[in-house]
Length: 91
Length: 216
Image (cartoon, rainbow over all chains, first blue to last red; front, side, top):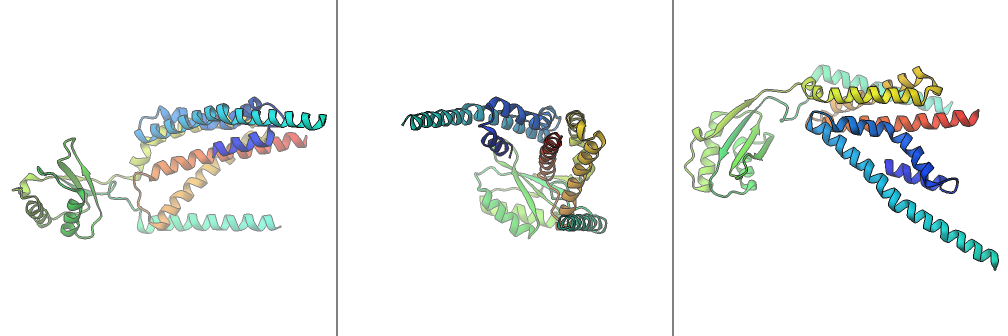
């Protein structure tokens, strides 16, 4: 669900600013989830700590994946589009 | 007008579910799964290699249609534990006899260890989660108040607490109405709902704040 939201935010705002700003905005929304994941990770019972750890690693993976792949792919597409536009303008 | 009608319909549905849940809980009580209810556990050591499916069919033929939990107990996987609601002495003798016939062993009823499990109350199940939930809720509420103070401190505070309580009550009511047994996944699902609820609330407040700043 969080990943879907981030994807939506990136696609909606990619032209307006850098992906860094989008990630900062997304992190502000994610802060309660990060708090839950950290507090639950240190919970005394197995079920609570499992949920906390799963959420924590889920959030971490989400950031790593989107920074490594989504960001790179979108920047490649953006550069290609700009190049194609320039070539078309020259023609 | 249409929006108002929809809101009223939603309030009526939620109210009906809550009242029905409350009535069901008062009249019929909470339905606990075997793992949390009063039960008897027997443990038996079977030397020859055995198939779990064979043991299951023996259990079903001996104890009838009773719900049961079967687990391998130790690392050697020769010992099995069976949890059932009620077990009579005759059933134990019959069970041992069937095991002896199937695996050519010479077990007796004395070779079976019997344990009586007492029932666990919902308060005892919830108690172990309460500290983590309260601690995270306090930190989140402080964060939400600071972040969305422009929307009104009391509004944010009351909205958050009311929404969290309402959703959890709805969840309990649905459990009570459908007579779903309270088992090991009940509380993790409640925690998951809690996490999603906080996430959705933050999104909602963020959108409201953006709208307010845009209007200015």
